[in-house]
Length: 117
Figure 1 (tube, helix red, strand yellow):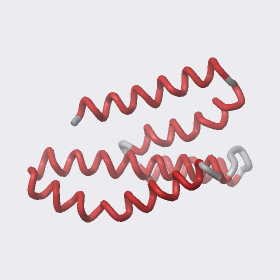
Figure 2 (tube, one colour):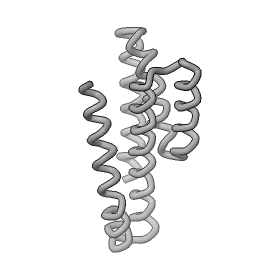
Figure 3 (cartoon, rainbow, N blue to C red):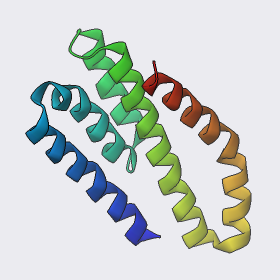
């Protein structure tokens, strides 16, 4: 599981680098989302607060803010589920995952709708 988590982080970074080379304006919009997603593995509050503060100053659009905050929330939830399985075992991890399933699906749905907007 830890390997998959690291691979996801590496994929975010690679995507950002490829985008930067391909299109600078896209990278400027994508970077906050990628950074918040990676930061979300450790602490969702700090990532969301940082992005919200920058949105309040007009540095980011609300679209970017929603994507970055949602991605931070999803990555943070994923890391908590991994820890629940690693520390609490299969039974606890399964119960814990079921508790977080509905918020995870709702957040994912909002993010997909935001991407298509």
